[in-house]
Image 1 (cartoon, rainbow over the protein chains, first blue to last red):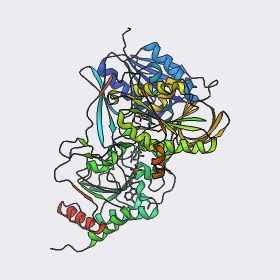
Image 2: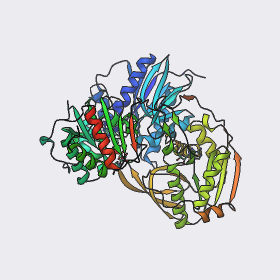
Image 3: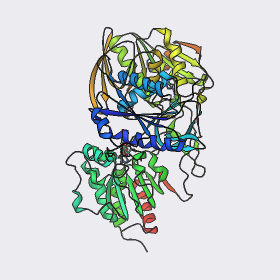
Image 4: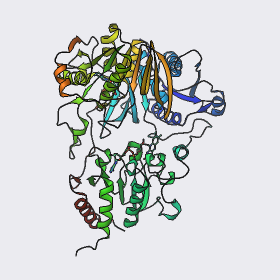
Length: 327
Length: 252
Ligand SMILES: Cc1cc2nc3c(=O)[nH]c(=O)nc-3n(C[C@H](O)[C@H](O)[C@H](O)COP(=O)(O)OP(=O)(O)OC[C@H]3O[C@@H](n4cnc5c(N)ncnc54)[C@H](O)[C@@H]3O)c2cc1C
Ligand SMILES: Nc1ncnc2c1ncn2[C@@H]1O[C@H](COP(=O)(O)O)[C@@H](O)[C@H]1O
């Protein structure tokens, strides 16, 4: 059996442009290649990648760049062409680690690629590291409420896909990483039902933050969360879902593609606590969560949790905060 | 049309509690059918209603998985195939997919339906890997299916955008995740009928091994003074929270 070596990143190029997620893959690949002391191989997969190849320009010369043109012409489903090309690159290089895209598009071929080559695969990876000369990755299980660490037999190639938005992206040669903030800002609708940001307490540096998520549902829920923030003299924050739904402006987003906050109090209402959101608030001193689902991962890090409907609990809390304190 | 639907038995993640002191998940209740697979069973029945044919529910695991097979039969599947193995806890997605693919390979299925991902291991790999091992295409994010002879019109969610594709059978369809409860459930009448339906057993013919090793899942350890109010009326809970906020000097 031939020896496996090297860390291979299968970056995606769409229309000559490297995808934002590819910068996260690059960053993870670089960390692993450094940690293992092995060659870093960057493959650019796409129907057209010349622009990207040109732009990479001054890439660290120790990185091997492979151009892998995908021809989607004669396949029924595009991912089949990507899978064929990816399989060729992996077979040629026999790497120790392969990083496939964790995007919706990339997921369609990553697991198939692993099955075709008979290799173990793990998806939704939230962190990568090298420990005792071996690769160790983490991922969430059991509905995001627990985490497991995965290792791979060092004689076998490990295929992995990353959970998007969890690993800090890095520049690829001359191409700066598109910040996730910008990606989300673009996803966000132009106007939202929330009060304009200018009239509020700034999120950055706030001592208290009250954030709402998808559970706010509509303008009524948003108004409730804003009123609670007012009662607590807190800044308002939001989850990525609330932003994409047009409830809250992107400036208020907390998380890996929003603001990272470390207030004394972080109160989360109607948001589940996805890894991307926790990234932005887990260092808060005290966390309070209001959620109707007792299994929401946010309760895992809450100091005070109320399982209940925010449309009942939040008005009651506003009333309780306004009521005179019995001495 | 010959339809297969893959159903997995999993721990009921809604009943898993994380021990605050050790961080270890505690599984209390009986295992259940994977949430996504209940949707897959419904999609199989929808397809049978428009295209006719027969549905076989397929599950890999120890004897216990007969429960989820019976539950699929009681919801409307016509027969069941138990791919027996006592070692599935050491299998990774590839071994699982190989065992399932091998069990269905010679059954002549036109459409094979899987869930998006397992509630417990959350890999979202097995459906696609079954397709790869069988050498047939798959479609992910499937929302609705219409049939027309040998081909299917499939409406799917392509990264947030709906698209309609026409595909030839055989094909693996991976049903889009849904937060809604599935339309159909096992009925009492279905349970009675299930007793008369055919359940076959084959041995898994692939070793249940993996080059991967995974650590015991660990949840967050929480401090002993963590407070979680469940089933407390909103007003009472709010008053307690307000007092707690004041006590910790967290009000403005
Ligand atoms: C590259 C990338 C980057 C991302 N970056 C970020 C980021 O920076 N920040 C971020 O937040 N997200 C980010 N996301 C999105 C993230 O993956 C989730 O989609 C998002 O965090 C979910 O928001 P949510 O918790 O509001 O929604 P959900 O996960 O849908 O949770 C809604 C919660 O509300 C609860 N609920 C519903 N109704 C009620 C009610 N009446 N009362 C009480 N509770 C109720 C539900 O039980 C549920 O737990 C990113 C995603 C990607 C792919
Ligand atoms: N042991 C199993 N038996 C039957 N089907 C399974 C099994 N494991 C996974 N599947 C199918 O594959 C889908 C994706 O699972 P996973 O890749 O584990 O997240 C599930 O929704 C099921 O349809």
